[in-house]
Image (cartoon, rainbow, N blue to C red):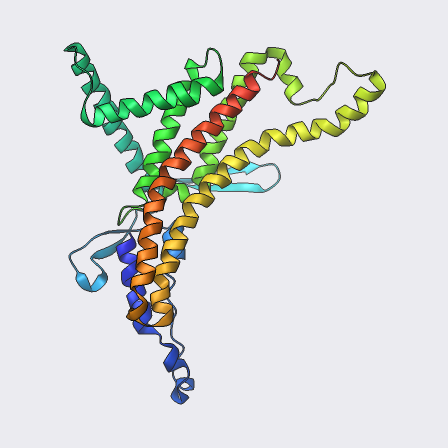
Length: 319
């Protein structure tokens, strides 16, 4: 993907020149079209880049994704009809790729572990690395934060971790795209987690779950309970929705910002119109890309950690 946008950047450099803009004859010439190499990389579209042997086009070519799939409207009480088009987009295709990779890698690692365990041998290679990550996330992140009898939440939270990790990593590969840089994707992940959090609270607290919505201080006189409840109950309710909001924005912003910085640094070469300054922006872009590797892992870890903490908080809120 980045190779394609780098090729577009070269086109942008030769298509417009700051010197030509100052020329006396420029007024008579038609306006040159400016090429945006940043926005197409971080937004969703009906097109994807695939490898090509054509060097003139940056070893990439653009294909149009299928259109005309079924669409329907969902009536919403305030905003009206919400139109849903099931035709695939670039980020939808990336989510499919992530799902396939998850099945292949994790199921393959499980089968390898099972075969070696039957022989009395420890796992090795990729299966051993996957097992180490699973054990660490399970024993050091999920169970301590979710609390007692939290084994039922391990499959969901582990799937969440690896899904976000794979999606983040694929965005660093040429011709690929970062699906987690789409706020619709992060909002969906956060919404699913929100449902898990609230259902966990309902199962753990029973009728006491209402106390997580309506603040009712039983140790205060009645004359104090009513005003305190009127003031703090809205705060409690808003607090429930700030959790998925924080999960949504944190992942979306972090995965988008890195790509913008990299493309902006590379764009400095074309802004100044000189390859003499290229070594400095390229070196900084490489450093940011290395940092992005850590950020990809860190954001998957933080999303899983915060989800575990939120589940644990609502389950233990009766204490």
